[in-house]
Image (cartoon, rainbow, N blue to C red; front, side):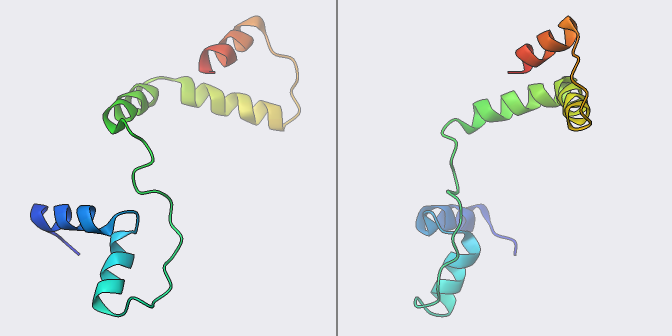
Length: 92
């Protein structure tokens, strides 16, 4: 469904921790419908900062490097160079 900005604001305000779908179902049909368990809709307090961090991670090669290290670890490769150890420490 598409909503106007006003409708979105209404849903955000009144749906509280329910998903929009559950909120609309309970309003349209019946309040006795069992609610689905969902995660908190806004678990991060500083969404703007999270967006910046994820953007920086997306631009870096860190994700790719960590994936390669995980593959090596899963294959039983145990010898890491000093550079690899530094990469892991920087990733942490």
